[in-house]
Image (cartoon, rainbow, N blue to C red; front, side, top):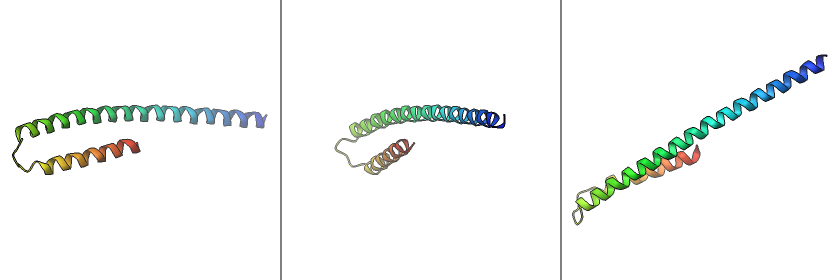
Length: 85
């Protein structure tokens, strides 16, 4: 009787742990999808802004290069964070 009870408790514990694991994975998958969508939106906005700056400052040296460089660094940082997630 005791071994049957132990077996039932072990099975219930394992099933519960698997269920929690599946739910956590689903939640993290949703976060990754949302991050990727935000990153794509951010990338499109950055590209649009850079094109506007480049067309407005064509042939002029306005000091925008440092902003462009920082934007590229931020992009790489975001890509690294998403890849690590």
